[in-house]
Image (tube, rainbow, N blue to C red; front, side, top):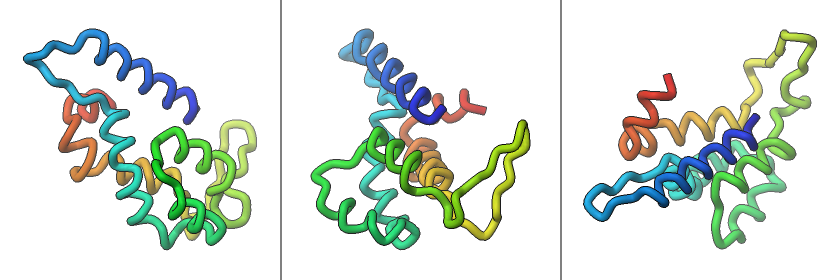
Length: 124
């Protein structure tokens, strides 16, 4: 579902770009999140797996696509993340879920709430 959400955000950005008017400037949520990625990951660096820190420091650019790929494959909470059994998902509350932390930072007042208030209001 994370990758599907990324594809939907890309489509919305493409629609915004197709129908943009010179007098009306609308920033897509994906643009805001992509721009915020380096700042958010720097803030969350102490929580990242040790093997990810040197990789992150050497990358020229980081965007939501990169974050999504890493979160799905490598940033699982210690002990394997969630276990799904039918409709139940069991989390250990002492584990840090980097994806949730990233999304919370992207949606914060500093980023999405400030730059894309309409997108945030429609998300609820």
